[in-house]
Each structure stands twice: as structure tokens, then as C-alpha cells.
Length: 204
Image (tube, rainbow, N blue to C red; front, side):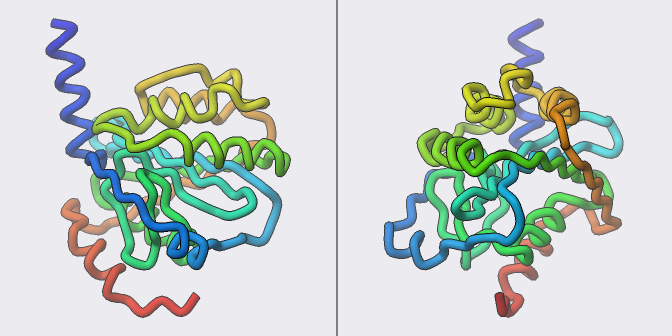
């Protein structure tokens, strides 16, 4: 019964937005795409939640350090303007963040965005951990994020978990955290959203 439950959980995560891939952009492409965001260093957890069942479906981690990136482990979202190494997307402008949220938020899913301010040193450590983690297999999105944060000062209370909602609940208890919830009435099939995002002219 336990094996069957774990298999069902893995399948649910894969369907919801976790898909294995391992691109590795060259140095010059990554350097050209580097985006330094305004504002203080921070770490933002994105949690995709099923509106019907209330279950967590996917986790992503935005890191605003010496550059701003998205660690989207085993995620299915991508944009041709953003070079990627394993599961780290580089060049994360405000427009690209909006694209990321819009892709995941639809009639059956909402997106919880939780941000905590950190020191430059802490932000850089999270960034380095994400870059060093490597490609994430299907259904391990949340577990990989909890492991990336596990040895970082200020995040010790999170522990290790496979469940997006549990990580979100623990993240909500961190000092100084702020939260934004995004809902959308878009149809459940979000493939068209991805195609539209990639076709738009981006001026940033």
C-alpha cells in the first residue's frame, strides 16, 4: 500500500508540472542574460496548489542575489529568452516572473508566492546551492528545494519534505515573510499560455 501511494504521488506531481529535463547553456549565453534586480536580496518560494483537491502540485524557488534566477526543479515552464542550466533559469526579469505565475495559475490551480528578505551572503549561498544541485528528477521539486535551503542560515527550521504545501506552511513561519496568492480563470490546458508567452515581443 505504501509503495502504491508513493507511486501515485509521483505521478500526480509529474502531471501537475514536474517534468525531467537537463539543458546546460554555455557560459557566454548565461553571462549575457544575467539580470540584476532592484531591491534587497531575497528568497521567494512559489507553491502551486490544486483548487479542487487542495493538494500541493509544484514548488519553485526564485533567488534574488548577485543576479536573479529561478530554480524550477523538474518544472515544465520555459522561455526561449531565458538560458537554463539544469533547472536554473537565468535572466529573470519582472516580465518573466509574471509569465511564470501566469503559466501555473489557472482555473484548477492557484499560486502562492512567499518572499523573505535575506542578507547578500545568504542569498548568494542559496544561489550557489541551486547552481550546484544538478538536474532534478520528476516528482522531486519540493524535496530538492528543501535540500537547497537545508544548510543555509535562517532556513534550518524548514527541514526536509517532499510535499509542496508542507514546505509552504513552514516557509510562512520564517521571520519577515510576505505572501501573495494569484488565481486565474484560464482554462486548465496551459499549453496555449506557454505558446503565447514565447510569441510575445519582450522589450525588457
